[in-house]
Image: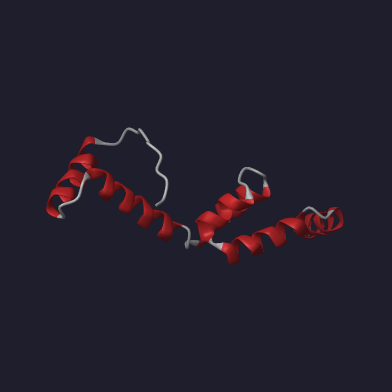
Length: 103
């Protein structure tokens, strides 16, 4: 059984009304509908190039930990980010990249 965390947030009234109507139609509760929607959004968003770039940038800037990245984009992509981050932290490589960008 997975653990759960209680979350409180504000959402537009119309959005909650739609979630409630869908919950009634599908014989579910509001939480199930919202969790399913969030799960689908995260799965789809993490496959989009701009989102992956934002995740990579946050990881390279130490705003995200490796385990967080892995949870979002999967093991293979996270490992690729880790390898690149290691290369980017190599001072000589960083200097070379900066010089190449200045050209």
